[in-house]
Length: 271
Image 1: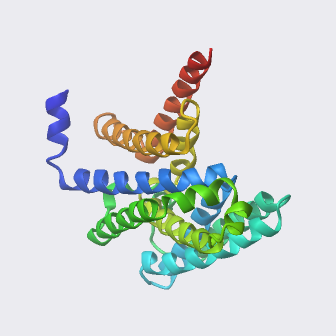
Image 2 (image 1 turned 90 degrees about the vertical axis):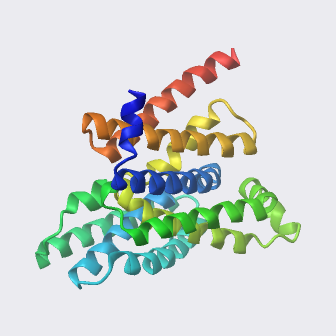
Image 3 (image 1 turned 60 degrees about the horizontal axis):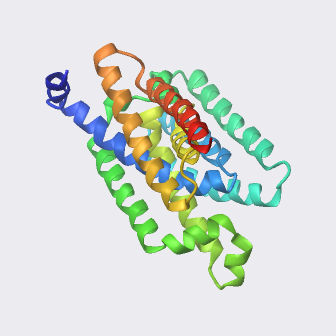
């Protein structure tokens, strides 16, 4: 089995998939800590649906989907963030309406124009179709996210738990919210190739929820989330390679199994 796993690395498309998968999973888990702890995990789901609509428009106009999706999703992230902040009670409901509308419009455009595109790749991912541009962008994104957490760790920590207190201490909370929104937008757009529109938000939510079952400190949750996310991506790709399971769905199921295990372990430890 070990020899077979090493043999797997002889395929270039597998190596690309692993590199991009690890980059996106790390970015998603790190940013996910901030979003889940602030009860804004729905924003990731909303952005993925917007990205699908933007990709659909780009495909219909014969433009580069990636170059169209990135600016559209960044603008949408500001709009959704503002929407969520102003409507505390109905924020998630409004984001759901915004997200489903984007998904519906995108599907109608593809169906009406009749372009020759495999819509399943957009909905559930196509990790083995990674281009060199997407590989480079994923690595650059990981550098940016890690750099942001290393340079602004204390400020991000403070803003995550008490935004009002952070603001009173002179921290520019709006600036750090914008940084997180932009990085999250880029992660969602690039993550669509790995997980697809319908599943990419799982990379944001699952690792954080799993790590919180055992770890209670912010640093512990951040580190554990990154490890869990990378491990689940790796196991999902290995299972797909040897058993031929849908890679995006397999990664989600692996995350679900890990969450259940961490939940059980957490209860045992607390007893």
